[in-house]
Image (cartoon, rainbow, N blue to C red):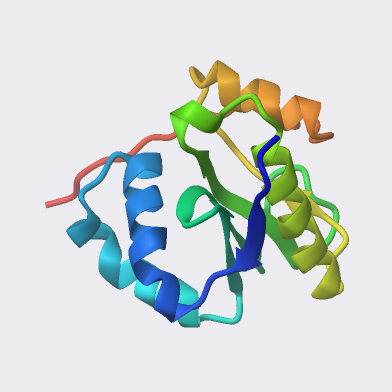
Amino acid sequence: MDHFKIYQANINDLEDVLILASLLFNKPIVKLKYEFENILKDQKYAVFLLKIQQLCIGLAYVSIRYDYVEGSSSAPVGYLEGIYIRENFRKKYYAKKLLTYCEQWILNQKISEFASDCELQNVDSFDFHMQCGFKEVNKIICFIKKLN
């Protein structure tokens, strides 16, 4: 494993955050900019970056959720909103290292439960969650209806 550095991002890291978030969500940077500017300023969120030398290769961000979180028995709950490692650097435990920083941040907020989700077809994400100690609590299908 290469020498790496993980740190909590701030507004000065917006460019790196946006590049990785656009890869994670498959959306143009311009559509994510406003959201992540707010996330980086909000105390209910933490964004962590993983760098090797000057190259930013990983991102994870967590939130504190006060609404009901599926499978939880307390509130608030820490929530892994997203985690991403550049393809060339996957399968080298970088995601687990990022997750450890997220878990510690949640514990520092005096929160004892940590939740996450993934899409049904995302087998890699499911496997990652299971390997990291999450347990599956439910599978859901979401619906929406336009009202005119």
